[in-house]
Length: 463
Image (tube, rainbow, N blue to C red; front, side, top):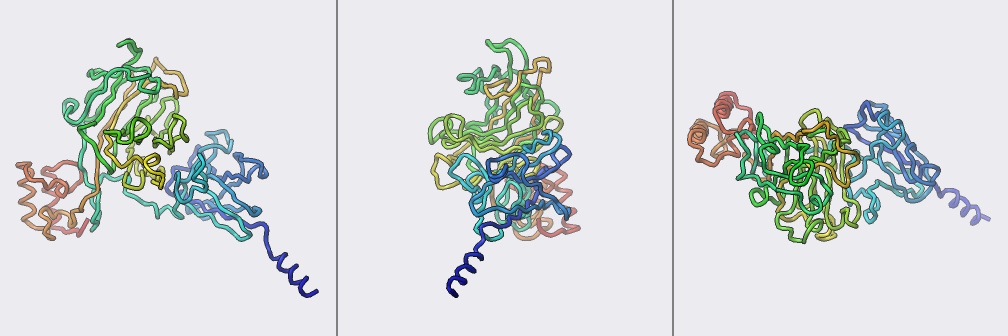
């Protein structure tokens, strides 16, 4: 009898369900906002466990700390979920903007399938799910980055972003020592069924008010109904790893497809998609301010592979300039818009098929018209349409400058540094540019000298 009671106690003490608590930090997200003002969890247990639906668990921010909380009781088992923001913009469908974890990351619950979902296992004990939305970090301050800066050095850092290449488009014409023009219609409309004929004419690409303008025209040219331009840095600017940044304003006419992207220079793993593609920014004109950052390779592509990994956001892309960036190193590709984190594509142990990004890539700027993927008709009445680029910059990690103003790197800032800086400004023949651009405007001139003198008179310490 005692043994039977003891076994019953053990049996009753075993729990077949538990409470799951969600703590979702939205600090680094553009959501919630006036269009999408509700934060929800959409999981595999929704609709009574019979599938996913838009309305499942609504989270609340009762502490006004941008951490949205909610709880649900679930039976033992494995569950997957995504973060969703919903609101008037999607007619309160509950399927507004979906925030996934980084693909193939530690928090992608099932990295072998084609979906990127958070997940957990219930085993009778309370479970907490804490994430900075769109990342694997518990809180967003763990994911802080210099994604939106101009590459200035940080205080005492031994590895800092240093400018290695840029085009500020301040000259009278396009600098063809930096840029190539690709001409024609390509193969099968550049592989996408595009409608334009790319030219190197000034009507399609020119400098205006310190900006590069790529202009798409509605005209009959070379057997096509549209013209535009496609420019590359291939064999003039090629890099392995770095931070690639562009300040860009995109057009809004339906049918336009502007892009700021990168392709392999030598395609060491074979033709597309095997050697990879990095789309820093793409925009479809009929999709308002929805921009995308996408990664293509042998494993993730539209040519029979798993659909490519893509991160997206709603920004005022057509009404103003935005800074689009990727930070690329040996293990990951991190995407940003105006310094706001979008998502990370991680290297796994799947070989070149999943990570061909260990070779030189070059930059491409183009404005396409139409494609097999275009979700709307081309609005010919709105042409000409312009893609405007304020600058393109490439940074790579290097040794930092230490003390701000220490031009000769002798661990002190004094009149010797002023003399060296004056000599540089006058002759431009001393390569101290990385540590001499004190006001971080990508120019070495009299303003840097004034800055240095003020720094000596009123020292501010290290960067």
